[in-house]
Length: 204
Image 1: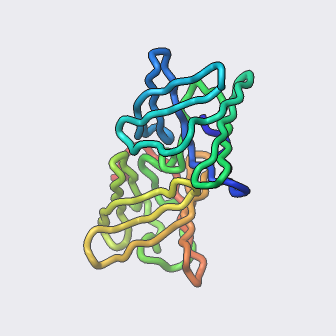
Image 2: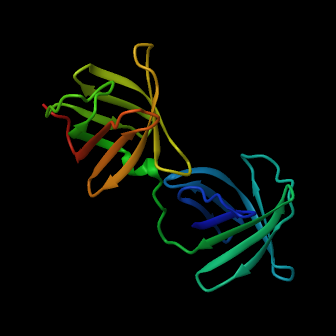
């Protein structure tokens, strides 16, 4: 699991990034529960250099990584486009969760602050559902709204893109609680937030 990525002086660690190495020199990579890359790997024990090929990706124009092996972690270093790259990885037996993984499922509205596009009224039948296919649906005082959503790859921010032209897309910061999430509208002059609790079935 990738713990830290540094590009020069900047920390650019992607959310929940991992790579799995197999004994047959194949490898898989992904973020959270989503595997997006696969291919091969090769390690030269004399030079301590690691080469990774993603067969479903682009050719890597950079030199192999110089690797420092520790007990339960390792460090990869190389230069990319004139910038020093340092990646610290830790051994893990489980896949990490991304910000997007954590919001999957069904959430009932629990509280609302500020006037927004929807969820201005507290009602036991108001909910939002985030599907694995990056589609959402919600029920509020505006009725049923459907669309697609994106979760930022580096920070807990959510983009909602409703279908149709009646509602524009908007951006929310996600705060996670125990079986709850709070969405705070970004780029707004007033404070607008909606808190939801996880539920297991649609309200009747």
